[in-house]
Figure 1 (cartoon, rainbow, N blue to C red):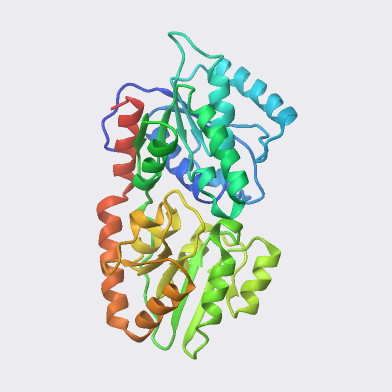
Figure 2 (figure 1 turned 90 degrees about the vertical axis):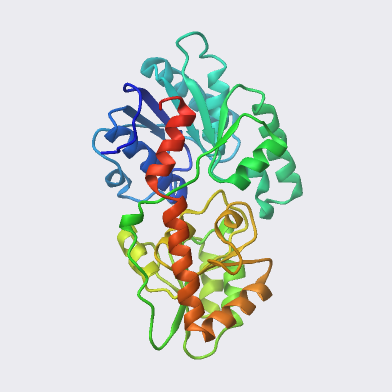
Length: 367
């Protein structure tokens, strides 16, 4: 049971289309804590290919679920049907708070909010979990379209909840000043400590093999560090072509694993690297830090909130930066241990679930 003092029980509805990976992790953490605090929680969600088969086991029994098909791409006919169904569910549920997660849920929810107004209307919140218009690999034209759509939607009254200070800064710069920062967090007690290896240095990452995670960069790095005693591990699976690219570079892939297995693989690493093209605030990096691992990450939104050069890891602009810093850490166990210990302290000080929930309740007006 959370020790965070809150006002009387509220009806809270979470709407989420990107029901997988880090978004699923954050929604489950928020919803579980809210349910344990006595609030009435309903999650309206879709199912994606990356949604784990055992997703229901991630949530406490008290939470109600409504499955509502939401497609990732813009599809006027499908979006109309989903929006109409969402309107009817919200009218029936009569929530005090509606918290939307990811771009499509945020778009549909904000449009529906235009038709649910008045004294009994809920408070509306939107967590992007990574801004669509910052997705570098999509190309300038698509990003311009995403930004234009978000600018139009930002005129609808709603409070943005940024998952990192740098995401909050981008929202203020491009969309709205009505934004609060609620840092992502993890259950620190659930993260096993990295034990370190004696005869090898194992470098790895945890997550789906997707465009966002830039597996091609990971493969390029691995291909330049083929000396004996160095191993590269990608815990997860996904895009078949990218998996082949990784395997060709000598990277070992585990394929899909459940959370407990993924955390065990994480604990087997000596160095964690995050090659993301874009982020919100990566849960996997927080978990790596909590495990006591030094982190090397691309210098993008989210990553740069977590990684402090020379203190808990290094930010990298390209493969050459990754290779340079990895070579230093491969040769110096004491430096790995020092950065890892400082990373663990950093995670414990800033990214606990209690801190996240206190900030979230304050944003909702429930504290």
